[in-house]
Length: 189
Image (cartoon, rainbow, N blue to C red; front, side):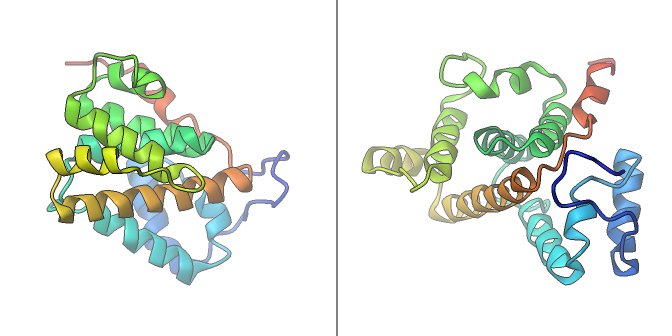
């Protein structure tokens, strides 16, 4: 990949130390994910980021897989990260088994597809992503109705991680990879 629109050019050769991550990406997505070609300039930091997201996405996470993907998709949209919207929309579609919620995330306030718990979490994601964060007492009270302190802490870490990722990718003009487009052609249950 050599994107002429990127003002910081992607690496054409990925450092050897990232081969395990590259192999996983190729197995799951069929290709190296675009951000790897920028993060690859700092392999140690990239491994730390990968371990951080791996912990947040672990099987025993406090948040459900759908909730995690929902929040990551929303933060990606707010941060205007083309790659993140694409990748996280695919993740949300896979975890929901359909595109319905994916197509409504941007307008979640008007949609009837989201549960009360999801709506509060989406409001929290919007508030945390705002600069400066806009987490008021009313939202804190709503969060406490649905989530434990540990879940709120983990959710905040997930939202903060997605902000880091989306802002990194958006600032460097890392393009979408068409990942979610591949989901649209799949048969659904």
